[in-house]
Length: 408
Image (cartoon, rainbow, N blue to C red; front, top):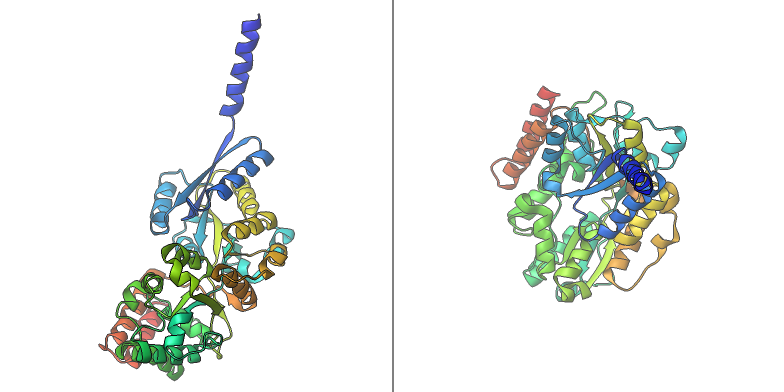
């Protein structure tokens, strides 16, 4: 009789485990640095939802979209997936995401401008997670060699460019690597207060003001003030040069200062952090958002949304920021926490404090338009042709606008 009871109990236990709902969420490039925090989230969600068995999977950013589309095609997508704002736009464009239904109370948790980033055609295709306004990490020793005052770093794009020229002329080292590779010149335009589309949805970025701004960077490139591989390797090249002590200013999210600390302690010790230099014409900083979305084909959308909102709630966003020390919440309550007002002497603490002062100017400027992959390639190829001297800045932008408007 006793054996029969034990067998029945074991059978019941096995049945209960078998009946657990299997969920899976993906993040982008957080392992192994943030394993403990992700495992905490898994344990907490399972505690609050005893019938759920939750699995965390970390995926490299360069393979995530392809892997996600493959799982959707196979009918086995993850329950929720961490996407950057530009990934969200591309996957929405391909019909790979499910819309969410958020109540007014759920919407109010987030800053309205962060929620807007994941809103297409009036529907929510993601909830915002973390972001980090760009800052300028600068090498005080290179500043001194160039005759610049380390206690007075550039505060505008215009003075940053002037300082970069002085640094190259005086030391032979590069002053900065501008974020203009791929289609990032679109964000440079918008940060300068210049429009991309008119009210009718037509591309208008070939005005004299747009041409002058592009020509500024073409001149820097031609005269050797920015590295030759700026258009090919962009931020990767900038981080490598800065960590090697061969770049004076690194335009970066504060989280990447951690990489400098790991790569070269001496350079990190000489690093101070300044606010991202504002273009006076725009007074806005392009700040890409991370979020969580529900892939197409998820069976239990209500449970998926519950998981997405759990991962991005006030408590968990604040805890994630405390662990990363360099990222910021997209929720109203968590962002007001005193943690973000605490400074320090090292570059990581400075980066957090400086970045927190820029949140009021932060805006994700990622845009949604049809045939984005095709149009982005046209943009990239023509800007590179201008940089290489194969086209004038005017001709390059004219050609892009003509091709875009023919497609739009």
